Length: 342
Ligand SMILES: [Fe+2]
Image (cartoon, rainbow, N blue to C red; front, side, top):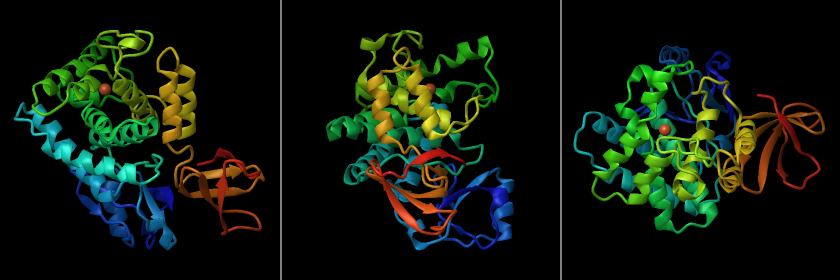
């Protein structure tokens, strides 16, 4: 499976991951043979990249099924939009989908390994779902009980719900925010906490994730400037997951970072900003080189990452005598990934 810019994708290539719309519906299903019309339509909708595949193994199930992923997207969107309209908030869908998500992650040994297929419209919901998945994997790796992971997951999925009360011009601004805009933005955790507190059936711990996810270890965060021991464990987990996803999704005004770069930057910012234990936990929970990465190996050949498990990374050689051959690299093998090329 390769993650390619739309310009490099040709007619006849097979879609390896479905293209999902912002409401969780399937725009194009995986396995589809792409035509010129599909490619034009995607371009018109501002999609920039797609996963395309070559062999049958490209279509194996991921750690989180596409169905659960798109359901989560759909429920999160519904709750967020209802919050914006100040309508009755019904979290049942979110609580149900969290059950599925947690079950799927607990049943498989997964690393977070999604880079999304998206256009400009669906960032907030996709971000929420991805932060939810990362938080569940982190909670599992930390050894939390299943009920605790569910509370954490609900908080992670809804952490940014307060953004629905911030003007779009601020949320969608590509450049640095002005002082006044930033001051307004700093209210979203409080708005989120307030709206979630009024909802029956949500635990206090989940609501505090929304309230505390922009706090920082040294007290430099917002809205209350809490310090390390005042910040709830779930919020510390979501803080790390939130920043990692923002850095790797090209949303901030900075360049999009690759997974390994984001982890290095977060490690450098800890312990002032993040709990170092949480950054270590994050590093154990996300793939360093996600599927689709083209990497330089230490034998100077180039390889494509085709599959990832906790113990190994499957590589297909793109150059050299072994071109086309696939091997599984384990942590103490002599052959190693040197760096990511694309
Ligand atoms: Fe936020």
